[in-house]
Every structure is written in structure tokens, then in C-alpha cells.
Image (cartoon, rainbow, N blue to C red; front, side, top):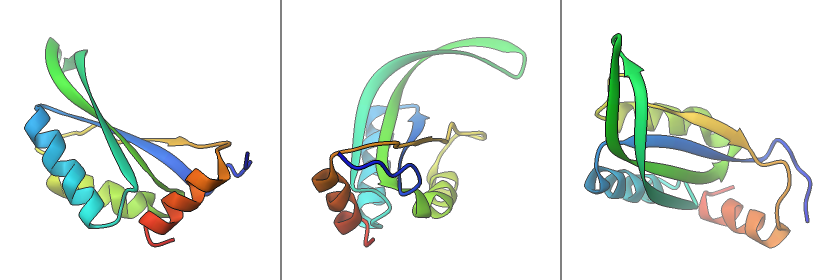
Length: 109
């Protein structure tokens, strides 16, 4: 196990449909901004413009290097249909060293 709390992260974003999620995931991989993108179907309950909303969404878990966060955020914002998309960075505080090396190799690190 490697303990490196600054080199790797998981970025989360949600989007309105599975087709949009798949398209965004493919773009992120093609741009080498992600090593892996997992997509999960979720139900989101939230407040938007003072109104309670209840929507089906796709949640993307994007595995990448922390150094790419700014570029990744910019890319998501440019390609996301939401006015204010969820873009949250979760640091990886420990991980299997071979997996982390694979993230490096897959994202040009």
C-alpha cells in the first residue's frame, strides 16, 4: 500500500442521463484526464432555485491525478449541460501502488 495524500483523487460529477454520462466518460478517457470512469445510476433529491427536485441521474466516479484537477474541472464545465454541475474532488489517502502507477500511465503522469 502507498500512502500519498496529494497525488491521486476521485472526482465526482452527476449528469442527467446514462447517454450523457457515457459520452462524458469517453471524452475524459480520450483526453487522458481520467484513467477510469465508473458510472452508477442514482436518484438525487436537491433544492434548485428554491424548489425541491427529485431526479434520476448518472453519477460518475473519475479516477485521476490531483495535478489534473483544474484541467478536469474546466473540461467538465465546458462539456456539462447543467448550469452548476456537481464537481467534487475526493483525495486518495492510500492505495495499491500498482493501481496508482496505472493511473499515472493512463493519464500521462
